[in-house]
Amino acid sequence: MGAEAEVRRAPLAVPTGAPRPARPATGDGGTPRKVWVGWSWVVRAASLLAAAGLWQLLTVTDARIWLRFDRLPTLGEIGAEAGRQLTTPLYYLDLLQSLVRILTGFGLAAVAGITVGIAVARSRRTGYVLLPLLEAVRPIPAIALVPVAILLFPADEQGIVFITFAAAFFPIMVSTRHAVRALPTLWEDAVRTLGGGRRHVLRNVVLPGILPGVFGGLSVGMGVAWICVISAEMISGEFGVGYRTWSSYTVVDYPAVIVGMATIGALGWLTSASIELLGRRATRWLPRAEGSRA
Amino acid sequence: MTALAALDGAADRRDGPAGLGFALDGLSLGYGHGMVLRDVHLEVVPSEVLVVVGASGSGKSTLLRALAGLLSPFSGKILAGGVEVAATSRDRAMVFQDDALLPWRTVRRNVELPLRLRKVPRRERGAAADTWIARVGLAGFEERLPRELSGGMRQRVQLARSLVAAPRAVLMDEPFGALDAQTRAEMQRLLLDVLRDTRATVVFVTHDVDEALLLADRVAVLGQRGVRSLIDVPEPRTPGADRSELRARILEEL
Ligand SMILES: Nc1ncnc2c1ncn2[C@@H]1O[C@H](COP(=O)(O)OP(=O)(O)O)[C@@H](O)[C@H]1O
Ligand SMILES: [Mg+2]
Image 1 (cartoon, chains in turn brown, blue):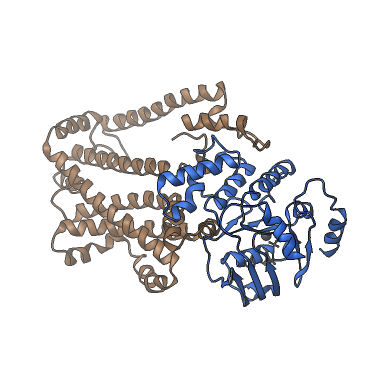
Image 2: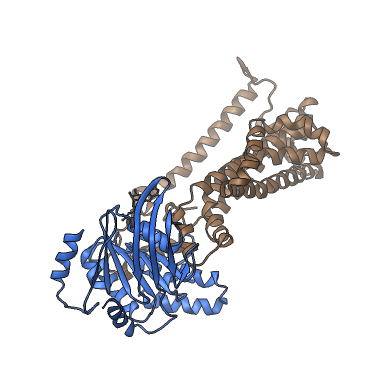
């Protein structure tokens, strides 16, 4: 990584005559570590293959060892079903539908959660007004809001987005609030004595300074948002990966259930990896990012 | 005598807006219920370098925060340039002991910050920042993040950042207190060099008597009950001047 190389060059040019002792860089351990890094991929792949092999063994032999594998599909059946589904437009329609729902709900939750989190942490008055309300609603799991959502919204679609929003909102709001509180006052003092006002502090200190904490909340929020969007789709809905998975189950199409599950897993992984990546980019200034790889 | 010393000090420091004078009148400061400083009376002459020395916990930082407008007094008042201090101001920049740089901003973007807050156009502020970065000996480090710099280098950046927008007063809270002896000596030389070109009033807090005598026009000794004494330094900032007598006097006061 370029930045890393630059860091190592720094001590040569330090003009203060007090070069900091070089940190033991993580990626710099010489050969033993490199060998292990190469091996680690073999081990990782072997671990996955072993699990797949075990599944295959249990399902092909229709094992009934208290757990009953006789009705679960083999890897071949799952593969065939996946191959079939991947060529139908319906699969992509479902996928898109679920993605739109989660991104809408999650996007709204991110904006609202960060805004409210900052507002209640920075302004005592806003805190007095909003916190009792938020604390009263917070213990209710978002999925328990399904009946209300069905009554409240004219269309299922909006209800599902609402549930997703409600699920992701709280972790994001709470982590934002804590991040604002944990911000060192020194940065704010510095900006104020350089001529900055409230808005400047918000823009130049609070927003960038809370990002590490906020991204923690976004990760958690995305996780619960998926739980809720899939559950809500299973309860009410006419499209979506969750709906399709559940309806496959009701028509005893077990390979399709597994394909649905795998799709949900892949989507979940994709969205949380994106957040992780964005988070790393946005918080590159953190000390611990030094020398560590993305 | 005091005013004369200050004028001498100002004579060779030409550029920038006129220095800001402070008048502290019956000032009491503290936090919550605890009073830290009681009934302080003090004049800070425009363009002088006033060094405040005192034991740890004597209220030096508290006093400086009040001058900056970060802490409002229990009673009494602070006038800066004849106007009561009610909030922070771009006229009164502050340099902190450490870690006051915004860690997500590069050296250049940290130094530019006060100009940005003043809506100075981008190109202009970039040029001004680079000039100051070179002035404090950090040319070539513009794109570094604070975590990639040593403690001494970070304090150089803070110095540049506090002076880039030509404030009328600079309040420095033990800016070299966290540095090793050699780096501190270099920073003191740099500060002396930089101060020659500005008319800004400097209030510098330290617990190091030698540092005080090296930099000051006047030294204020802070004790349990406010300012214990005010000492003029003859021929301020003259290398090789014999300060042993003053030094002994201040140590006795402390
Ligand atoms: N934020 C604060 N809240 C409460 N008490 C404080 C705070 N900051 C400082 N103090 C108290 O005020 C006194 C003076 O502190 P300070 O001004 O930092 O001293 P100095 O800078 O001379 O070491 C100390 O007794 C300290 O405990
Ligand atoms: Mg202090």
